[in-house]
Amino acid sequence: MNTKIVKRVVLATAAVLALGAGGAYLYLDATSDTKRPGSEACTDVIPADGNRADGEAICTTIDALTAAWGRGDADAYGRQFTAGATYTTYIGSHYEGRSDITEGHRALFEDFLKGSKLSATYLDLRFLGKDAAILTGRGDDYTGGKPKATELSKVQTYTLVRDTDGVWRIAAFHNTQRQNVMERFSFLYSPATAPKAEK
Image 1: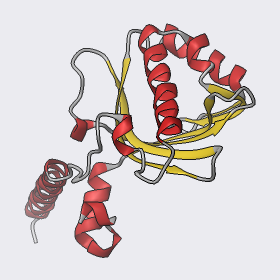
Image 2: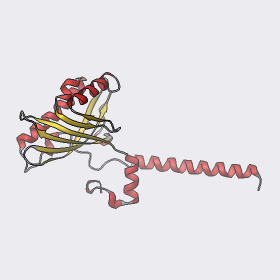
Image 3: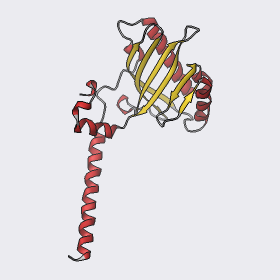
């Protein structure tokens, strides 16, 4: 077979495969919105059988955290965490202690995240006894227009405790980047992997 023809066939095959892969990616991306984006009000996820006052106090802590971020106030942001808190970002940076969290965010607010705000929705609040709770939600930082609930790209977990002064503070925070195309692919390939709320 002519070498020129072989090269053309190989190139044409590669082009068809690339277009197919690109089309598949675009399809998965376009159909990957979450079915449960969460509630925009933290107080909406306070459990009916939970302590309402504690739930509202937890939401106040989260509201203060969001407001501090919006002002670029690292000190106020850090005060929402316990002295020994841990903080894991979606890129894998792991901060240990309020001081580490505060100073890391001071640098972020002066550089990468300068002028940004936080947007969040809330999925669930569970109390683990009377002095500990887990709050899960979706969130993102943004500049310009606020993203829609379905556009929030991170899943976030806050572990909160009633601190020694009685104030609810964050003892651990974990931020996970949602890989929407991979998630959609896995749900299509193996539907049983989808969480109940996404079926």
